[in-house]
Each structure stands twice: as C-alpha cells, then as structure tokens.
Length: 336
Length: 220
Ligand SMILES: Nc1ncnc2c1ncn2[C@@H]1O[C@H](COP(=O)(O)OP(=O)(O)OP(=O)(O)O)[C@@H](O)[C@H]1O
Ligand SMILES: [Mg+2]
Image (tube, rainbow over all chains, first blue to last red):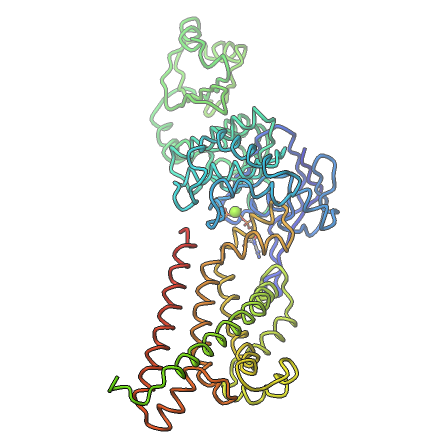
C-alpha cells in the first residue's frame, strides 16, 4: 500500500519556483496495477520518483506499507530502495556489464547473498523473462524489448513488492509493447506485485491497469477504476485521452448525429452482458428500430466490454431502455 | 654502422631505460592521484550527486593553475618539494614528482570529462537500487567510464613521454635529453634520429595499446 498525504513538489529554477506537483492525496492498494496518465510535463515522473525519493518532496508524507518514507535517514532509505524495483523508458542498463551481471547488480549491492545464491537467482529471473540464452551478452547486443525484459528481471532481483515503471514501453514498437505489458500483467498476478505505471497512452492503461489517475498540470484531475474512467470519462483531459485511444473525433460525431433521427443513446456492456444477445431481443419486444452510429468491443484488462452508440426510432424506447438497464447495461442518453 | 658513427648504443640503451622508468613511475602515481581527484571533481561539479560549489571552484582553480604552468617552470619551482619527497632533485627519482605534478591535473580533468559522459539514467538506476555513493562510483560510474578512462591514461602517457624530454634539465637523462644534448646542441644528427625514432616507436606502442584496450572495453 502506497499512500500520499498532501504531498507536493516545487522545483527552484533560477530563483523561480515551478510547481511540478500540487498537494496530492493518493492511495495505491497492494497488488494493483496503478496507471498514471497525463501529457508531457503533467508531473507523472515527479510523482513516481517521489515514491522512492529520487526526488525529495517539498512537503507532505509518503507512506509505503505504513513506513514514512519521507522520514527515512540515508541508510534506511537505501534499504527501503533495495526492496523496490524500478524500470525506465531507456532501460538504463549498464553497458559495461553482461545481462547476467546487470540482473545480479541489486543483489550484489545489497551484499546479503553468496555468489552461488546470486547465480541461482539470476538464472531463475532470466528464465522467467525468457532470456536464459542471452545471459552472457552485453545490452548493446539486445533488442529494445529484450533490454526492457532485462530491466524487469533486474528490478525484481531483490523480490520487491512494488515495481515503478516510468514510461517502460514508450520506446518500444506496438508488438513489443504488448509482450512487455503481458509480462507485467503476469508478474502482477504471480507475485501479487504492486505496479505503478506511467504512460501517455490510454491503450496501455486499458490493457493492464486496475486503477488509473489522470494528471494535468501537476494535479490528479480524475481517478478511479479503469473501466469507470475509460468508459465514462469526465474531465476534458481524460476525454481527450480516451477519444485519442478510440480514434474518435467529437466534431465528427456531432456531424453524424445531425444526420440521424430519433434518440441517441450510448450503451455500455461489461462482463457477461457483452456476450448476451440482448440488443436484438429487446428491440423485437419493444418494437424499437435502431441503427449503430459507432462502437467498439474490447477488453479492459481482461474484462470484456462493448460500447455502442445507437439511434432509436419508433416503438416503446423507454421500455427498451428500462430493460437494458435491468440487464446491467449502462445507458447514457446523448440526445433525447 | 658508417651512418651512425656518433651513436653510442650503450648510452641509447641506458637512456631508453631511463625514459621507461620515468614514464612508468610517473604514470603510476599520476593515475593513483589523478583518478580520485577526477572523481572528486566530477562528484562536486555542477548538478552532480555531491554538488559543492565552493570546493569545486577551489579544486578547479588549483588544477587550472598547475595546467597553465609551462612544464619547464614547474620542474624548477618544484625542486625544494622534490627534495623533500625523494631526498634528491636529480636523476629519474628527481624527475618523477614534477612529472606527476604536471600530469595529474591534466589527467584528472580527462577523468572528470569521461565520467560526465556516463548516462545520468544509469546513475539514477543505481541509486534506485539502493546503492551508496561509494557503490555508485565503484560499481557503476567507473566501469561505465572505463573506455574513457583508458583513453585518458593513453593521452596522459603520451604527454608524459614529451615531458620526460624536458626532465634533462634536472639531469634525469632519457631519450629526449639525449636528443637535445647530442642531436641539437652538438649537431649529431644521427643521435637525434635514433632517439626520435625510438620515441616515436614508444608513442606508437602506447597509442595502439590504449586503442586496443578501449575497443575491448567498449560494449557499445
Ligand atoms: N529537475 C527539475 N528541475 C526543474 N524542473 C523540473 C525538474 N524535473 C521536472 N521539472 C518540471 O516539473 C514538471 C513536471 O515534470 P515531470 O517530469 O514530472 O513531467 P512528466 O509528466 O513526467 O512529463 P513527460 O511525459 O514529458 O515525462 C515539468 O514542468 C518539468 O519542467
Ligand atoms: Mg516523465
């Protein structure tokens, strides 16, 4: 469990103060994948780096499993950091060390293990991330995706309960991104690992996160379960991210709506409702005709969802909507 | 051997030995002192882990003073100090302290530059692992900067070779001294030629050895 209590951060640059993080309260429960999304300069990295005090907070308290991180002395901080993994956009592997030596590094620094123990643990970690054959290579000989998997193995070497990821997939192509996200997903389940993940792609959030916080200008402007935030975005920044991910355009949509008659509704199906043949059934019973204006069927983490925008003509539309609501479909009326 | 009538091969051999002794001894102490000084310069420098504006300015100033002094002046100014350290201001032993004093600031600057080339992200990742400052230097900074530091040692060694030529002033001998005394002052062109060729060979060996090590340790 990571807790922020009125944590804020200002940088002094040439006499001027820049607020990177406004006073912030936040709770990240153990075992969750928590996403942080925001535009460049929103303060995501600042927030993340406060957790392991790569940045010193200007005020407030940060508690990790009840320990006040902000009050730790130098030695305590080092021990705390040893129990916390971190991966980076540009991997930050040591180019002078082999893959195996990179992964062994946190264990050697901790100085609590014999050489044999370290060898066994490194072999196990490399096997887990699928890089056993690359143990003796140097980072320069690996692809981006492989480097990030070395980064993950290194971050997990000391069996941390928390993994911090600063844009871990931003330098990777879509397919490699998917593989790395899949690995994070699995590790989260296997190890009950808390993962705090920064991204500027809503799609990354949708695929792996349980909770998401949207940041804008040093503030968390919206926060909640991913399904809630993704399917019913409220803040303009969130809406922009979702629309970007869905490749939608608000102006185009308004144009489309002007072309059709009747009521316009947006239906959101989640879980089992996604697969049920509800729409046809209810339309037949209520005598409502519908046309589909847009929509998408996909998954949020691994819960299926469908979101359809329909126009309804004729019949008993109120009855139809009531029936949909009764079947756990979220109904939003976009035009009455 | 008609062309080399003035060349006394025994003298040449002794001079070569002197040069190698001066080079080896001064390079050893230069690295021993210059490496920590370079690390200190880097760590206390602007925006670094141990930023200390005052200390950095002071160190930087001392380094600049020593570097701006012509070596020949340093050689003479150092005589009292050399006497104190080695008990003599003459010969190979007398030449080593001024050589070290001349080369250490130069080498320290090169080390500082090599350390600055290390990606900040790597230092950060090492910090995030919970490394102490000493561990960051030993386990991350120095290994990552190794090719740069080896290149710095190479350049310093070659600079020391040319400094040793001037060490004749304190009677240290060596190939450079031979070239100046016989070749230049007595117009014995053949002696000059032989010593210059030997110095050239020495520089070539140092450079290619250094280059090879740099390539070996560059995993990029
Ligand atoms: N070391 C620093 N010194 C001064 N200002 C900083 C420093 N680090 C960050 N900032 C400022 O703080 C604000 C937040 O930066 P931060 O790096 O947290 O943004 P971010 O959301 O991670 O952006 P990006 O997506 O580009 O990585 C920015 O305005 C940035 O300029
Ligand atoms: Mg960032």
